[in-house]
Figure 1 (cartoon, rainbow, N blue to C red):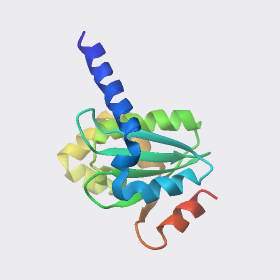
Figure 2: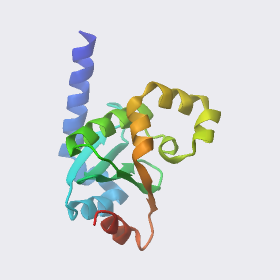
Figure 3: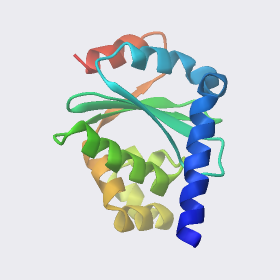
Figure 4: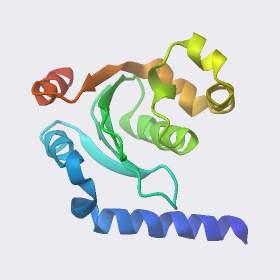
Length: 155
């Protein structure tokens, strides 16, 4: 069955990621260390089963910080939500699978979504991407003050 095969591939890819997480974090190791100091659940996920890119998140009560671990340096994306942590995590996982590493879809204004057919289609087709956009509380660019800004967000 195709569905079982795909599911097995995802499980194996997640196991491999978690088994080698420290080696794969690279420059995101500082973000991971900061996340571990927060009052939050730490979760790790893949964009797809056949990609080296992945994401890490700290999910607290009503707040989350998400770091995309890709070849590009970027930012940490912040979210506020009013559902249970587990519910937000499930929506986050689905949204990340739908958007892959296309981080702009998270934070660009609706006018830019409307102007870009692939973004528009992703937002229209995925209620999880829409949820992520609606919970967006900003992003923190990596700089000397990055860690303190993320910690302050969780207070």
